[in-house]
Image 1 (tube, rainbow, N blue to C red):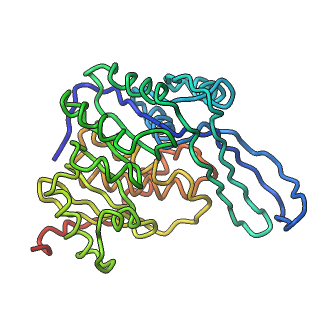
Image 2: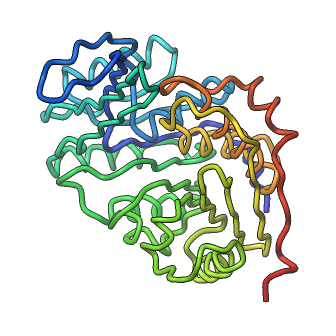
Length: 324
């Protein structure tokens, strides 16, 4: 199944944005001060990461997120410095910071992620209104990241149902109750990981065939038109409403940072769908982008040239004939 939208603007929504701090220390000391060097501050959160990636790929984007006048305004400023179009919805609670710290003596990275900042009903309704106001010319709507305290579990589901009525394809990348509450709401592309697949009821072994059979049941039940389960170094599986069942595996790469791999996958897959690629080709590109991301420091946007270099090394199979 292909999406060939003549409408190309991609809107992303990040309900739990973060100011991501990256630092390094020679060695972490227990029960003592550890002197660190700050290496970068970057705008973060699922949808923001996707918007940054897509912008670097030449797509027209709009990143919508709630944020306060401190960290939230700084996230806005950092996005503007990258020329990423964005809209900050004013919020009162301090926008969170996350920390990624590398211990240089061992090469280990510690990624400390804090809960999203609580939003009032008025604030999350303002975010909802911002999405309702986007043009019908929106090519994709990407709902990515967790829901912070104060936001109802069915928030993404509400937005997805309204977007479906407007013929706007929705991409969903979330977890927990927000994922369960978004079931059967008209999602076009849903990206899960194995833990999230189990959350939806998978109790089988982790063999490819068993997972694909369960994924096929979810697709037939209306979860999404395209359902993807990413599996780290094993690549990704995909089941589609048109009956495609595909596995794509990446080459081995040196892991520098796992931060942003999932967002890079979503970004590249959406980009290729917008460009008219087949679902299977878009999946392969997504796996290549994730492999490029984990071999890149921090939350930097993967180099498209690196993705193209990895693409011929992605192995993918159509497994439809192996399923009942």
